[in-house]
Length: 101
Image (cartoon, rainbow, N blue to C red; front, side):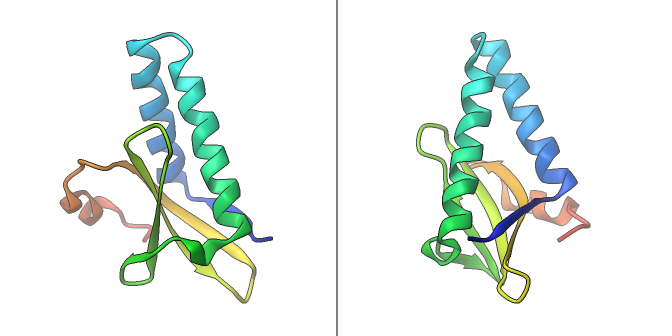
């Protein structure tokens, strides 16, 4: 099994989305966070099950929320590096704002 490394901006993505969902309905943010964790656990078990979407970045879609976890795989270190957790409708131009990719 691979170790998950969640980069700071990805943590911020998760935090912002959970906050937004809690504004919609109390407890929904917690459910979102749990689903993100579950998705990351699945990624760690089988990182190559998610397709490469661009460059070396793979994307795994959450089951109940319209978000994707964007990650790369370091086979040598047995790590998956989560670089973003973005809403599926987000403009790809947002990637240009990421300096840690």
